[in-house]
Length: 113
Image (tube, rainbow, N blue to C red):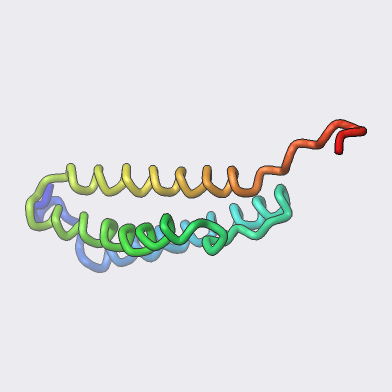
């Protein structure tokens, strides 16, 4: 798969990358608006613990840039698959953390103090 005959030309990859980034940005904007409308809380990473955000902020870019480089060097698509699965798991984990942090507290029964 890493042979030149299988790979797309550099400009096509650039177009794919720009398109993916634009779609991701649009989806993030929609998710942010929906989250704010549903919970009344802005979707911001600064509300999550720094011990979780710093490794993600450093690790995900390294993972997303490093996996294609290693794929290109080794020709093994397992690197791309692993990077995609890890990225998806981190995304779901962040979503679940936001949900847990911003759950509306249960209403106390009347008369309870």
